[in-house]
Every structure is written in C-alpha cells, then in structure tokens.
Image (cartoon, rainbow, N blue to C red):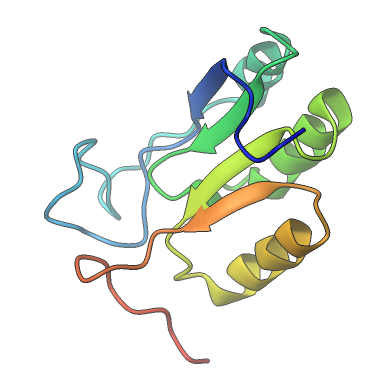
Length: 123
C-alpha cells in the first residue's frame, strides 16, 4: 500500500477531549470537553468498510482513557499500515511511542505542530 493511496477513508472521532485549547479548533475540543466514544461503538466502527484507511481522531486521541486498547483493536482488525491518526504531541511519551510505530510501518500518523498549537513539553 502506498502512502495514503486508499481512496476511501473512515474517520472516527473518539473524543472531544483535548489537552490543548486552540482558537482555530472547529470541533470546540479542549480540556473542558469530557466526551469519549465507548468501546462498543469503536469496535462496531472497526467493522465498517474493512478495506479502507481507518482514521482515528478527536480532540486529542491520546486523551481517551482507552486509547491504547483502541489502537490494539484497530491493528488486530485492520492490520499494519491501515491505521492513521493525528496527534498534537503534547503527551510526549505517547507521541514517541506513536513515532516508533510510524517508523516501523505499523501506523501512519502526523504531528499537528504549527504556530497555532502549544509547544510539546520537554520533560
């Protein structure tokens, strides 16, 4: 599979919670939002159009308390190279784990760091 060569994609917004409060957020996500997709809903979404690229989003996906369980389920159902997500990288430990998964070809991801986002912590 070539990068982003899949014509059809599914976007699953797992949470409205985010560890940033960006002025440009079109979903009004932020620390004040505590909305999380249930495990059952996520697993049902994994069954749709299995040949498509599965996009995990939010808010900040890593803020979901079941984030790593969701990632494992998605990889088990969809397989390596068929999961995509964006992270703001503020949760540095999670961002580094995700970067390793990208490096190893397990997932595709992007870091949403620009002049509008808060910087990633150095600790």
